[in-house]
Length: 475
Image (cartoon, rainbow, N blue to C red; front, top):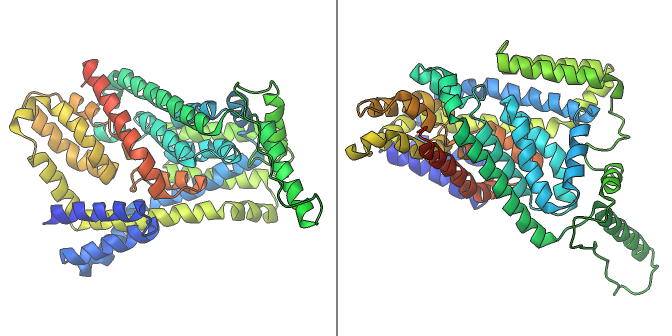
């Protein structure tokens, strides 16, 4: 019964948010509360929620202060050279922009933190997508899938969890998986190429100066018409020129013009820039990421200290500090609200025992004949299980059971551990992953729209990694 109710609760949540019948925050709170009553444990709802909030509180604190920290770094211009480089590469070609999104997300993912990756990627790419009227779900989908492949880094979380749960060395799990993960990342780049090609066919290849001219003409004609000047109202606003090539040869100038014209985070004259403190901010960020990788302190503590230092050094006056915090308050509130709402969902799943029954049922339905192929089975199960469960629930609750079943048929725990990583590209768009709310929140994309777009591509990426692992004899 608990198994059926668990799957029904998850299905109800996904259907309602994808059909936009409820907001994610409302669905994350009300649906599990209702199902908790159905299970007959409504009296314990408060205990489940408090336990869930307690488990996710460090994550919420990390996200809150990470948003403030990286928001300040964007404000002061730390990432402007990266953004300008991406702009010069992408020009105004939708194909290059989508590929650039995948490459940037993969590079930034080296820090092992999804929230950081999404904040930097969206800050750099969002202005281009908006200005050129490109699909924002393409940006969020490509960024999430690229980050999912890179999330398997030993310091990213899943590999460390698998190693801990099975008492293995993280290096022994990860290093042999590198060829399969490289194939997965290559597939994401190829996928971004074709998605970008589709956007190019829809929009054409523009130059940034063409787009800016169009917007200025629209503004000018609006002013003239409002003033009663310019003839009849039958005149049509001219559209941006569509060319058949990659630009008119002035794309670098156009990119600079675009920066001057107010691309978010790229205005070279914005008052928050601190060019004299550039190397201090760069050193602080490198030190912060190094401390994260080396695990010198818990990540929430590092971001709390980092945000306090960044604000104090870059904006020594209290008034300016308050202004920077207020500027990023919307993102902080949206993301932290999502995290605490997700705590209700995970708290009920775990507290009522639904997740345990779901995991046991899935393991029990595996035919005995599949025993010698438990690596493949684990890889396939990792897709739905890491999507519908937290990484902690899967790696500490389900993986040991799968490893025992594999050991009974002579399958190495290392093989099971490696196979368990292939679901991460899909996992990074799970409603139980706090970082995905940073992604959709900053990109101003509905979570349901993101889910509808990304699930098929992320699942396909996971299957490519699994296939490559089997082909190379890793799994």
